[in-house]
Image 1 (cartoon, rainbow, N blue to C red):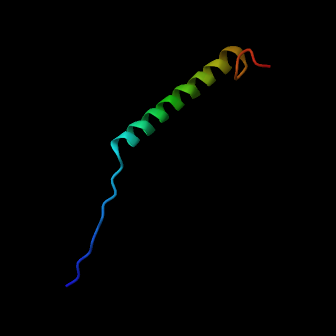
Image 2: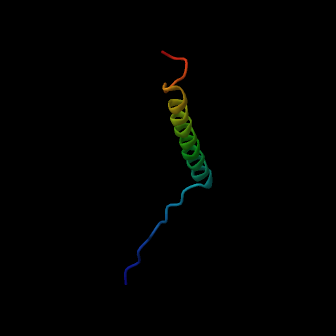
Image 3: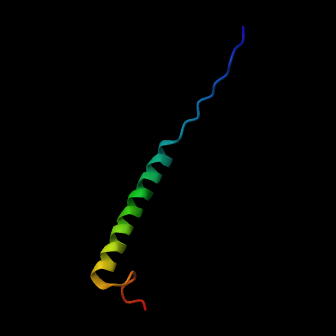
Length: 48
């Protein structure tokens, strides 16, 4: 009879929350960059 040890890896809740927030802020930044480009024609308004 053989016995197998299976260890389950768990991700800490703090890391999941941090990555979720990071992704959401990245999406907000992308939308802001697109909005700035559409309204001013520059990616960073005022920077030549």
